[in-house]
Amino acid sequence: MDIAFIWIRFVLCVAIIFIAGSKVARYGDIIATKTRLGGLWIGLVLLAVITSLPELFNGVSAVALVKAPDLTIGDLFGSNAINLLILALLDIVYHNRPLLTAASLRHLLPAGLSMVLVAFATVCILISTKVHDLGIGWTGMYTPVIILLYLFMMRVIFLREQRQNFQPSQDMDVSKYEPMSLRKTYLSFALWQLCLSLEQGYGWHLLARI
Image 1 (spheres, rainbow, N blue to C red):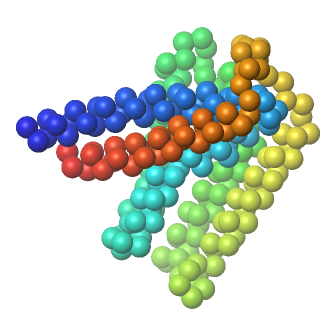
Image 2: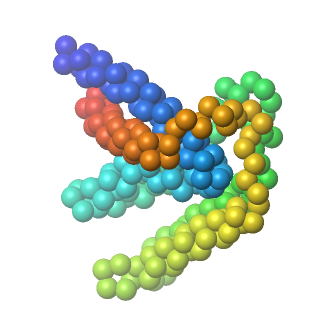
């Protein structure tokens, strides 16, 4: 009975995540339209940070509390793999045409730079385990490099997006967003993303008990 009750709560949690996720995507689209930053930038920074918060909390807990760094590294690289699986599943759901043909060529830059970051981390793991620990005190010398590379990547993509005139999608009804103020949009976005983050963390907690 206890297992059945856990499954019921898990299904409800998934339903809430689905609702909160759709709301976050909608308000993210409104922010991208009203601020003229574009969907690529909002998705790359704002949505990516929000959806990665549970992974951050899990990673910190695994390293600081459980003392299991392999859990964190596995979670991070596993997340990259599952994101590619999600891309494949979305391609099946998207009936109009192959999904990647609908994507803008502007995604090539963040995709390429992201691969550079992953490749750099992979090389650092190899060097740290086989050659030298690359340590600076209690942290690795590669840590500031990764941070600087990420900031540089965000800066390059932002400047490129600013140089291009953002044009809303032809399928997007911009007029329906006009009555909504940015202040209300930001507040609604923050509330739904908080709900999403909490439910994601609770969902993983329930899944671990099944």
